[in-house]
Image (cartoon, rainbow, N blue to C red):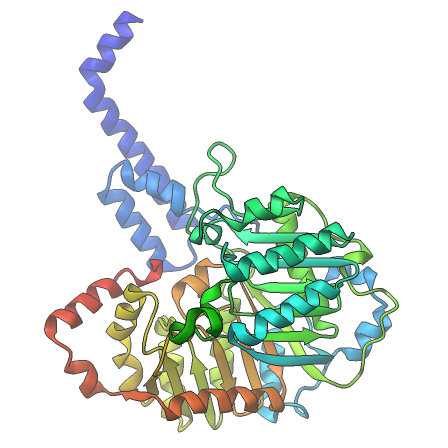
Length: 485
């Protein structure tokens, strides 16, 4: 043992060099063989080679995808339904409810998502926390069999406590309840809301909770999904987290704006299937009993809105939303409206937006005037000229921060949900969005976006170039890190 100690002391620089070379070689080979994006592969190999040992450790923690690979599939829960009812509401032709240009977009969605476009749904747009939280509370308090709730952020504040208490009361009266919160999102407030729920016995789990020894600290991939399903019949989804800053009576003039959606009909089956998939991944508990879904005797209306869930994430559904957005831009004929709080499209999306504008399609893009993430805003401004110079109209909204994520094409198709148009949402986060083939909802969203544009300032190349040099340099520097913001 003493001799070994002497050898280690004498030769530790050589051993360190050997370990460094071996670790870098193994990590570099793994990155080159597993990364789908050549830019990501090059970046990781560069970090690994030029930061001996540290680079390999960083890649081990933040670069390896340890997430499940299987797709969110509707097939495993289909037996809970009367298949004849599902077949009755399955939409094979969307032209009548949206427009002829969207027939090919539906075919694209059929290949991207395991879920089918289902009719017979009802959908209602909710403006901010003032409309969303009261509607959610009503649903929770009226629940008879089951409630599932998933959110990225669930703050322990006035709004969070009221929702948590409603969930606790439902659990105490015999309703089955499951709550899933992202492990990082749960830390936005202290103490976390999980303690309140768990102390009352409500089954609550954290998505990708860092546990040394069982799961390496892995903060790069998060669940950004937001949904609430009640009795398998009623659902809520969109982009809103649970926090009091969205409520006017509490936040006053600093209120954050957002848009959420309330749905009912067979689309709720798809929402519940998504939750069950994430819950099983997190806890190993299968939620396959009829109490979690609409009763098998449920009869769906053959009239209503055509909807489809599109889950995406760094697993088998990688780039699903990215592909849907590219497809939507390709079929656009008249007018595209986009509202995103964090607009950092990659080169493929920038090229698609540019091509769409150059074809004569009006492309309106709305970004916040006041952004809650200063670094993201700086990165946005660093590349915004790439959209403007190709003909897209970019607008800076007035007023307080708006967290809405809205995308409509030609007054007939909409894409709504949790995804931002940035690398994190499109490649790193687990997201959940809805395709909406309906003129009524598309025109309602268009009116909302147009009202914002009417009060917005248009960003021009002149205004971008008039910024001081140090501001433009700062923005470009931050932009270099945009894939990780």
